[in-house]
Image 1 (cartoon, rainbow, N blue to C red):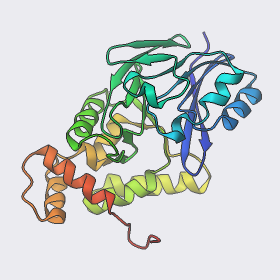
Image 2 (tube, rainbow, N blue to C red; image 1 turned 90 degrees about the vertical axis):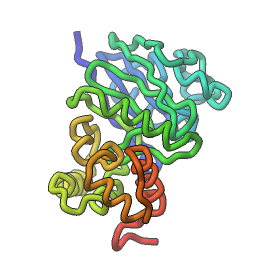
Image 3 (cartoon, rainbow, N blue to C red; image 1 turned 180 degrees about the vertical axis):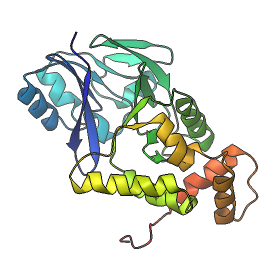
Image 4 (cartoon, rainbow, N blue to C red; image 1 turned 45 degrees about the horizontal axis):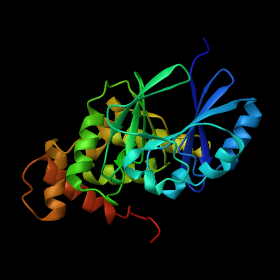
Length: 263
């Protein structure tokens, strides 16, 4: 059997649409734009067999109509956001499984960024949309800090070598914040150098892994004494427990500007 290949298709300013391939069969994840998908299918002489959606934001669903008009394929996505995702044909809930390309994907509800956000979890990788980013996490557009903290804690409990396919190239900006939270953390400085080298070559910084994120991502490290101390200093509040630290980190990141960044 051909191995499963997962290919990033850049879109807009900083999105990645993930194309899953096995032989000549393909699945696209979060197609905000149809054009790069059609180009990749043509270049690889592949046929689209399914569309997977993690949440309803336009940069993740804007290409569904165009793709569905050319390819008769199922469109999987969160049942809780069915009303906001035009073209959704297979609504999914916690505990469902999707079989694509001889791969089983478990459906996890991971609210926070949006209320109905889902992730697709395989044995050795996760398609997590805008919930978990490399060195960061999604903004709280609809959910609560408690919801997002619980969702991230669940993802963080996956095996360390689980590959993480998130959908934005935010890594350097996220690492700048991580360095502000833990300025003495060598792993973060090493990662900044590594990602800068990749981006200078036009290469993506993704995927990351769960184990790597546990070492560098402040949003998965709210229980670390150095992270909690930084959040307390920044907020000027005592902060009791991991959830309060996490919420303070998310507020801090919302207004964060890296030193020397354009305003």
